[in-house]
Amino acid sequence: MLPGVAQCNGVSIDTLNKCSKMSAAADENGNSKVCPKVCRITKALRKPQASLDLLPPMPEGLEPLKHQLAGHKFGHIDNSDLYGILDCKDGSILKPVMSQKKGQREKFFYELVNGDYNENAYFRKELYTLDIIRQLSKFTPTFLGMISLSEHPDVVYIKMEDESHGLLKPHILDVKIGAKPWEPEASHEKQQRQKLRCPHLDEIGFQILGARYYDCETRESITKLNLRTFTPHDLLYSGLFDIFRGLPCEARIVILEQILSQLNSISEWFSTQSYISFHGSSLLIVFEGEPNYLKKNVTTSTAITQLHRLVKVKMIDFVHVWEASKIDSNYLEGLRSLETYFSKLLDIFKAENRGKS
Image 1 (tube, rainbow, N blue to C red):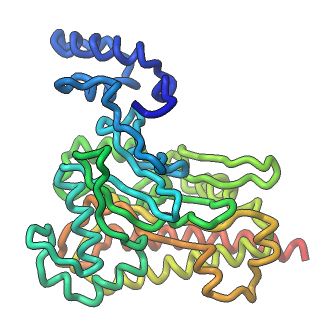
Image 2 (image 1 turned 90 degrees about the vertical axis):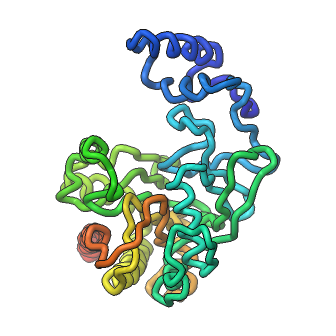
């Protein structure tokens, strides 16, 4: 059992055990008696010999990644596998690779980028020697290999760099790219479900799954998970604007320019390759948000090497990477739309700065 967890997201152990029995009975009768919130966890409990006592133990020295905004979270009630991203607290994180085909595809992707060919790999051998594929290492978290944990014998983990490590007040955005974020083989039902989650997806071309930032006025960390429902206007003027408005005036201009520069580099890569396509993949945008540090250290004369340490745009989530024969227009168009939003935001803050001068 997870140490110190008497409840799982507000649902008590006793309640979950009762719900497990109720859910099993409901399945037989074709009627649901259980709150949807516990359905996935009770599904796991109905597996042979499964119980809450068999929740994955937390390996010593590790903990669930606190700033994870999307995806499967460790021990979370909405995660039927129960495994999730772990923080090694040394600047690296562990992402589980489940036995499903899509999990294996992400493992093979990282090996592809690093030129580590495996005869069982999903991708063709020829791709491992292409320089343009190897260039992806600049845009993805540093791959630190595959590891196993004795506490989790059924899972293999991808070890990678934690992009927020070393930042005092990391601001983080998880942005899923593309107006069609589903894999080519997705059913019509799955496509419709994803469209409902982000009603303006066709117009925006991307969806912000979550954002976490530091409010300079209240001195509290704020997490927003509803941005995918915003209209295009509100996403710019209420969503993105709020995330950046508390930053020192000069620093936020520099940060936005650096984000745009890195987005442009990724766009250039996508505009010149037609070997692989990315479906349901995200960009992780991370930057320093501690106001006093930014005032002293981030100006228009700050060295580019220093900025790359304080501002990072990285591609993440590769469970639906496929071989292709043409340019990935879905991802590229979504990426260019994101660039447009950040360009407009930059113009807003530049105008605001001129008004203060």
